Image (cartoon, rainbow, N blue to C red; front, side, top):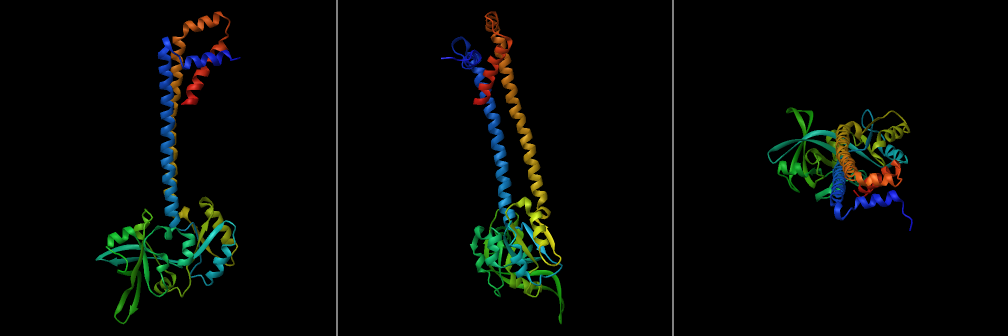
Length: 329
């Protein structure tokens, strides 16, 4: 059977036996070094990719991919909701009313982001329903003034299902008794946990209750969009808003949470760069191995040259040995 001379001798040198245990040993250590370098690279990058994915799925599963708002309450949010969903890259849309306030309960006070939503539509644009610990998103009923809070907030304020909390808005109301802050008693209807900072400052109430509390006249303040590609959200939101009659303002996740994901991307790039040096060290280890083999095989090389082997053929012998170590590693 025909076997190329360079390939045959290169394999023999890689798995040398009898008098050449040293060559086999350094070949094995070179393979192991390369294997460890590549393994570390894959493991660390996989951890970073998993961390990045979890943040995207959890945080961006709760906050809007993009938002279309007007200069005030939307007069006809139903038609806007219907029109933006006609865009081929918009998967779902839902109205919302959003504001900041404070929640008091258990003798403690905590600043929160109040989100007035319609439960039947919110579940199409948010992962909240899949991360409910107690209660359900559908427990929010119009007129009952129920509230859904995060696990961290529930632990901080020592709250559970059925407890009463007071929501205070940073707006004053003029009454015969004087100027008083606007506040309303709510009942805890559910607790969610997404494993992020949103568990401590994110709350959900029914949009009708939010409209009464924030005095929007039964109108939504904006429409939230769920798009098919996170990184295309700015472009999709702009196209969807351009198709609507009138003037609207758009916002997307890159403006609210962009710095977080840019930092993660930069960290992942730098870790990948550093770990590439590990692979480079393993590659230099193979080179040093071949240099040692050449030094050890000086007599064999002289014999092959005497028998007519060209320098190129001898070089290919050691290239085969290095290639075998690299491929197996």
